[in-house]
Amino acid sequence: MAKLSTDDLLDAFKEMTLLELSDFVKQFEEVFDVKAAAPVAAVAAAPGAAAPAEEAAAQDEFDVILEGAGDKKIQVIKEVRALTSLGLKEAKDLVDGAPKPLLEKVNKEAADKAKEALEKAGATVTVK
Image (cartoon, rainbow, N blue to C red; front, top):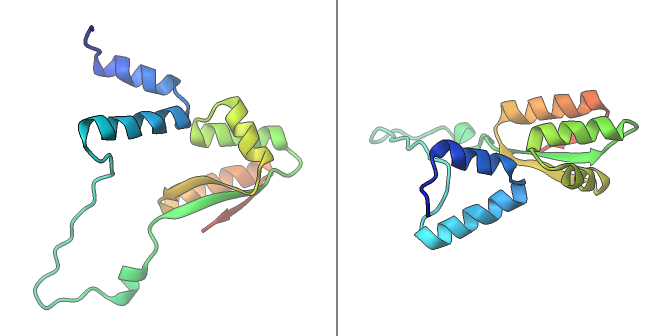
């Protein structure tokens, strides 16, 4: 088998839907006995120093939930595709099946940006 370059692999991944890519990651994890997870920054506290309860309870991951498409369904489908890189059919099915989670465990900035774009297209969105 010919060795694929990084660019070739990235091009192949760009062609995949989110579901196909998710299946690939699961198989990759099983074959190589690894866990694909975002690196977590370890914060070492000084001895005797305690983190404030407010910071520990601060939410840093948000879910964007599409509640409804509104009158401009086609515009909402376009925004869903832009935000998720889903194919046309998958995006349409997601919009038709609302309320459904659109983005899960994203940072506050990404959640707000997605909410703003979807509401501009005419959708009803909730961020949790």
